[in-house]
Picture (cartoon, rainbow, N blue to C red):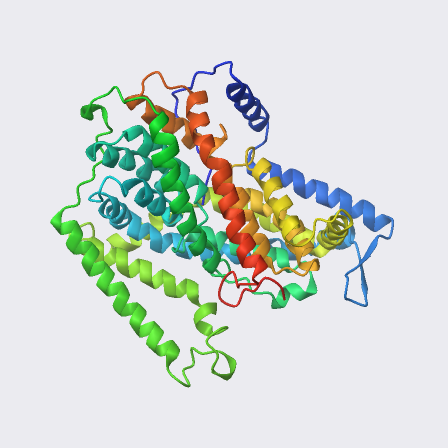
Length: 519
């Protein structure tokens, strides 16, 4: 999950070229946006005022396919005040992604703090042949959202060092690694807190319509799509790094000693033994779970012995929790990062402590989505929005493309993925449901826009961190030159994401287990 953190003190110079001016304009506009909590408080007031005004006029909406109409209810009324008092805490504690995200972060936090995740990244690319490096860096980067923001801090400088050791331009590894982490942030075979966060918001948004209760919104609803996209992104990313970016880069002017001291490609024998033991432990655990799932008559099967849906899919989060916790603990014990039992719960607590800003944001977001649902304003906007899309011919895949482009633009200014999805999901998830598309499709489309333009917005604090590291290899580098190099990845990755979605949509391929394109 991306969070907004203070940018490094090193400021980037601003040039006078077109890119510099465009990006400076984005930066000025974005800097005027309030803190996400204040933004959602303002949205709460706006929803309250609009719903109260519409309720006073007797506004009603009929859901297509339903016989009854529902009236808009006002927040700033007696009934609204009573509802809010009775539901303020349930809105927060019952928010679907809250428990899931905290659970996943606690387990992944153990794997991160013992060093397992970083060691796995180093081991995967440190000994690759030079010709394969760009593609391997791109592939690993497209799986990196499992590490959350740590991936943006670890992979680019590590890729630079690996490129340098292989006799290639380290600037290509640095910039290419960053671009692929950002553009593939929502892709991959791995499952992490980001998936839990998105599906929790999707589930809540789908409840705006009656049919949303039956729509699949589990953590794997986009798994087939994101796994497939990560392969395509890796191939395109590797090609862009090797054939487009690297030939156009200047030669680095620094020496090895100027590389950040904490970055190393070395994987010790002890660390390799830890990874082996962790891998064997997780495979043994997975074998037990899968065997129990496949056994005829197993209670882990669904109704009538079905594998999909089943309690295994419904309970995938606690199963993943145990897998990550087991892997992190076994690795930690092996490398002596865990020397006593208390170390594991301490690491879990540290990981959850880092989510405090997210918890505060969810407190406000939960109220906004709650009133969207209770007032029926979300239903009204969804019905009107779906009608508008139909009237201009933006239905089906074209409607999804238009939505992706909208998110791409918004993503330049609102760099928090959770905040942006919370803003658009309550309207577009039910709107596309009315256009006969499951919530999983809208969430998949959002992933594209949320990833494609993240790398080129000056409001992403990691862009300035990347510039700081880049200056170690290219002291004269400026923000404009960095963004221009990153921009070569935006359109190809956007087209690739959309092409893969088009294939799934055109051939009606499920986006994840039990998550079809249409009901």
